[in-house]
Image (cartoon, rainbow, N blue to C red):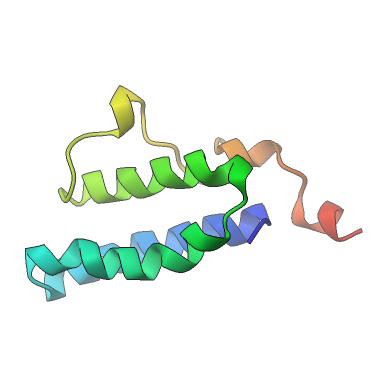
Length: 96
């Protein structure tokens, strides 16, 4: 999962999924269920994007009130043009 569009799409899926987990599961089970859902991304993300993915996931969990605050006082990164992945080669460029 080295294409930036794939990484941001999976992060978006996790972001969309999280409120449903919070609403449907007991609090003690939400983090375990979320970790299972995020396992595929975490296992396949390239090393150069691991920190970005970890910050995004921490921010998702903090926004849901499941873990304390933002990552080390830094603002939460978002996907799109402001993301650290924005400077990565576009998917079409990689496929050439």
